[in-house]
Image (cartoon, rainbow, N blue to C red; front, side, top):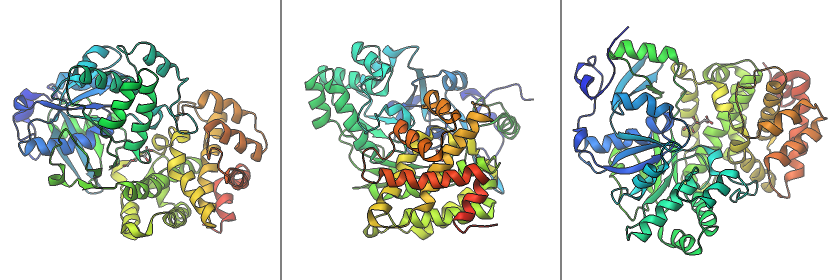
Length: 491
Ligand code: CS2
């Protein structure tokens, strides 16, 4: 075992071949506050920023904020915010130390310091990866104004808990102090993520102060962005292996794949790093890229997660290697591709070929249970939106609807047999007892659609429910094998 730890002091003693920050970390000033400093942020935005710092753009260091747990801060603060990025392919692992996160804050411990960082004139961009559920949307898509954390943040603006509360209070303070607003860059897997957050923020602010709502509506930029990199959760085996390769211990290295992509709507009134020099695509309209990614990558991911779990596969590469699942995903892609804009110049066949390669990367060991989390928050933009588009166009969508049924069946299996912690969903307290009732398939699906707000009051809602129910009958009777056989997919 190694006795010393990764830190500024041990950077020079790392094993050869490990890339380290080529810049003086003491000269970096904070320019970005990131909310939700989890593994995905550390393997994606923080790496692009590290590239910019390395090129001498020293005004864009990151202040990392956790909105809930102290885990990341507890792991990284003793190592001066440094951590290892392990880029893994089937035949190699490349290690790089990332230095772009200068300091870390835990919001529940010290909301005042988080607000001070957000209100600091040096902060010109606030990025977010807080996961789908933290946007606190009601089933119709608007703000869940009855959510206790929203109610609490409106009652005590100076002690916020939610991202909405922090952003609104910080923007209010900047305005009062005559400091220009920061740009808010949403990096979560939501459709039109910037515009979505902008709407939620205006709605939130209007509940505390009409002037602030107008200010946010008129003066604050919320560019949309599409982010992409597969980041499996770090395991203890990863930690042990990295310590040996590095020559010192790292409490929380992050694992990822060689591929990375970031497409950003170029609207940064307060300035931005020259991200385009490091492979970021700056565009006028992110929508085509974002829909392609959500519907093809994330849609297939959810399909592989639930069908994989139901077939006993623990990882994406294993599930995807099963011929029936592979055949299913190809057919799912064909349905989803038919919903993408034709005139946006998207090369969907190269894109899906690349996805197939990425999903097959055995070194990632990306767990199906990890992707299975929060299905109620993910399926609307990954699967249901495509299904509705297909229905409206009179196109086939039997594969899309099977994914929804597979989600319900996987949640039901978990309610009955799997440990409840296997994967979780914010609707669990209502979903699990509902599924334990074992109602007829059509009643189950209708109740789940109500609970999750799937398809809202769309004219297609009833048709979708009926189609999902047919698949659920098959899944209940004979698992994925029977459901696939009904679609002509056989092994
Ligand atoms: C995955 C995503 O866990 C999930 O739901 O589908 O985290 C996926 O790996 C990323 O969006 C890839 O960019």
